[in-house]
Length: 640
Image (cartoon, rainbow, N blue to C red):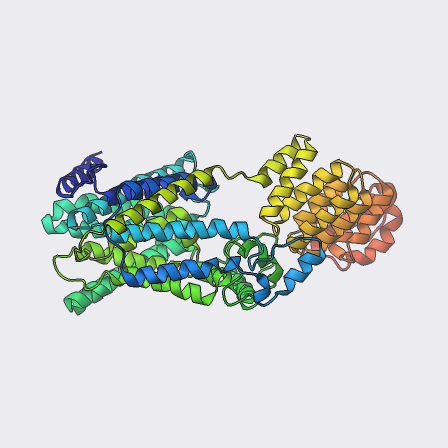
């Protein structure tokens, strides 16, 4: 409680020093922090409804607090060029290299638009989100920053993340699930713990920066911020994220190097690096589960993301110079999966920058890096009396965030990217005063109004795929088909709407049309075995022949480790029919382990005549199955 009161007092003191906005009564940069914290508490704004709220809030702030200045010209030119390049998905596909997958999906009866992007509506959605992020970054850069507003914004951000960190710790140790949080493993608000850790890493480094900044007024002033840093870093540790922990160490290391360079001091450099090495050693030796995340065992064959990157490079190499179109990675990646084939879908390539290269090409990715460089270039020169301790921490955290984007995708999650943008702008020096521009203020108001409209439109965009599934479950099959048609028009390369429509069509006795849609669903996700497995389960009562065909495809997709589990589900769902069981043995396709599992499930009157046949198969099986076969044979009084 004392810590909370002390932090509130410090923030209130800075509030009196800062120049408040005439409408908001606080600097607009502080309000931007509240938008970011709100986004984080709403599951990181990774779903449609929270995103619409955040976009509308961003628009209201820009609309009511428009800066009378433009961002830097270099940054503006790079940002506009990026927006132009990423809109290339709307160009005709005939102008570019035609990938082989286009012919495959057309042969299956899937109608694609004539644009480069096979799903232009998804591309538009992604482009609008990109434009919103660029507008927000430009507004933050053009807003009038001074020492008081920077300090107050930074401390407000740290306070918000401290509250978030406390909630993460409570969630972790009590199992409490805050409303709107999406982690299924109690690792924070984001569905992925790495993104929660990304934000906490930014907050932890910035909290230490606030402590260093407060040290100018005495050691007592820095204590609340060190305690806040401890809470945030404890929450980061509880997330067990390697990326977040490495990000913190990199940020502190870079901050130490820059501080040593500024003071031209080898002592600062060696002491700082030594302290980091000691902390890292203690963590690896006594860190328990945290250290376990960095352990490499004898069976280590490399992080799975390397296999994803390998297949992603194949996709990028087969795409035009301007990429395959924003929003299309998850739909196109299955056509290029080889090294990364497992029984799980991949929705992103485990790298923000590789994702950009795949969807918008190398030139656009280079422009994105240039935009980041232009923002961070404003941090120099890092002179005295420019809050260089606080800005130095923000700069180091920003570089760590950019590097983290090479091995994860925090830049594609609205909550985490807003936090990173704020920290990047916080690292910049105060802008040189310029004459107020009415045109700039009017343009920002238009941008704000556009964001409010985008948020309202986003909130009212229906999820046709989910609605189609709900209607099908309710038995309203005609309505489900209609909704699925709309979902397919929006996302023609998503397998789920075809599967939903197939079920609804089959329930209307349109078997041929349903079989065609099931085939399209299997084509669009050619590696995931559960799709043909569920198809077979659906056909089981009405069309057992089609069920066996689907199940055979499911087994074909499985390796030897996954096949027994899938085959077990088939045997459990199969009808009690001798002829059907015989067909199940046929689709086992000569796999000894599956054949033996089939035999061990047979009724005694069917199993006994086949003992001699399966004695030969038992010799090809593992020890557990051979022992089970011997016990089964003993039941019939036969020695094996």
